[in-house]
Amino acid sequence: MPLALLALTLSAFAIGTTEFVIVGLVPTIAVDLGVSLPSAGLLVSLYALGVAIGAPVLTALTGRWNRKSVLLTLMGIFVLGNLLAWQAPSYETLVLARILTGLAHGVFFSIGATIATRLVAKEKEASAIAIMFTGLTVALVTGVPLGTWIGQELGWRATFLIVSILGLVALIGSAILVPSNLKQAAPAKISEQLKVLTQPRLLLVYAMTAVGYGGTFVAFTYLAPILEQVSGFESSSIGLILLVYGVSVAIGNIWGGKLADKIGPIKALQIIFSALALILFVFTFTAGNQISAVLTVLIWGAFAFGNVPGLQVYVVQLAQKYTPNAVDVASGLNIAAFNIGIAIGSITGGVIVENMELMDTPWIGALIVVFAIVLTRISGILDARD
Image 1: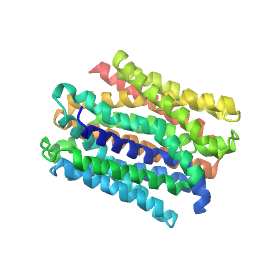
Image 2: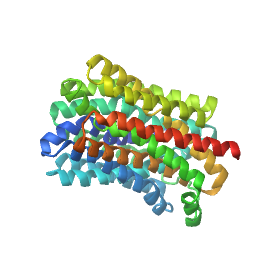
Image 3: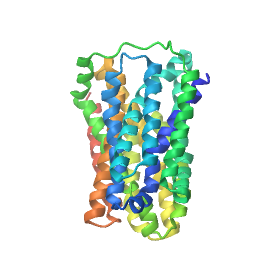
Image 4: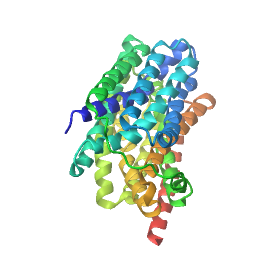
């Protein structure tokens, strides 16, 4: 495997860390900037909206640009966004920084997989993509808990400074190692891209993605304050608990992919969504005890991201059938749907915290995931008819 893949993997690690590390820093940022918990939680939503807008729109606008030029521009924006977050004098500046880095994130994962496949022989394309996305998984396992710990010990600003340094190293590595003459496919016509947005079967999968993923983030956005205020953990312990969660996520992601391969994405998604709804409901009652809270978070992690491989495979299968000339666009829009789910879920969680109680977030998140089960069932029925 070429060294250029290492630069892409490091980029994915830095980007994955900056997206999810905010979850562990919500209470710290709220206190330091003098804003409410829901306002701090909004930093998760606005980043996700930046990704959701950036993935389809900016990918389409940069379709004819040189791939290496786009990659370096994106990483430059990412570094600047995190430096702005590091020096943010106010909450409003931090919001702007999050949106800016979110825009870069959306396009990176849209074109990063394409660049990875162009670096290797055809028979190694899947392995190249897997290596690049390993950076995202490792970010959940190590980057997020380590970033949270740094934020707790040295202040949340230090976390963004370190992430920006990682991004700069990845940018320099990409500039040196990624070739300038990468082949690129002709971008899909606007009419073909629009067809994806008007295909009912694909829209149904995007709804499954947004609702199923969003239900988790109603509670996950406020996991740190729940563990501090309800479970009674010290803030310094949150990073360690997120490490446990991240390891579980990595295992669940692999297991979810194998399950989708073995029994098909629809059956796999029904099992994973059902388990996720159950564990969120159970967390409402187990969060009050430290041991049961950690055990529940451990099981939660195994199912929270286990739906990702099944959803991504399913949308590609349907796109190949209904919009064969715009499979990449359809896949990119599913990444946008994930982030719309994160945005809606974290905003919903903020409304619940503001108007109800902190511990109302898990059971309401569970109800939202139940809706995803219903949508999955409908899609399965439509598949059977076809």
